[in-house]
Amino acid sequence: MNVSYEGPGSVYSDVAVAGDQIYLSGLIAENLESGELCLGTIEEQTERIMQNLRVMLERHGSAMSKLIRVEIFLTDFSERDRMNAVYVRHFPAGKLPARLCVGVTGLASGCKIEVMAQACR
Image (cartoon, rainbow, N blue to C red; front, top):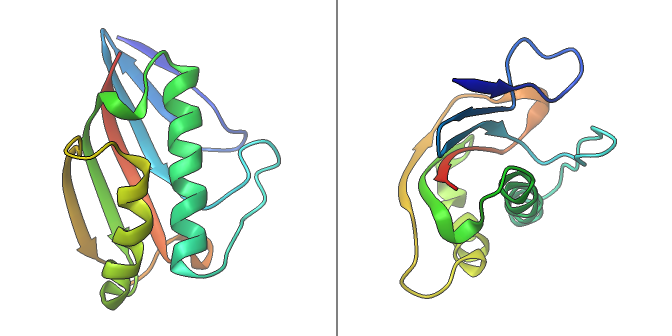
């Protein structure tokens, strides 16, 4: 298995690649270059994460259209519909990956949402 590491000071790999499979660790609303958090509304955080997801997939030879599974963690499950409105705009009609969306009691650094994903190349 080829595992790549990204992110200073982390105790995990942001991305693990095994053959043609790409596993992305939890993405939060942050600037990928500076690491600065981009907190705001659930819509703003979701948009940033979806943009980051696209960038991370492209860095590793994949694309949004090649996502297999997405896992979403929300600190306020009542914001699910608002998150979904942003999420769905990032996929072609009828091309949504399998997905899990759950409510959690808390996420790192006060984030409202965290997203994990699996894709193929």
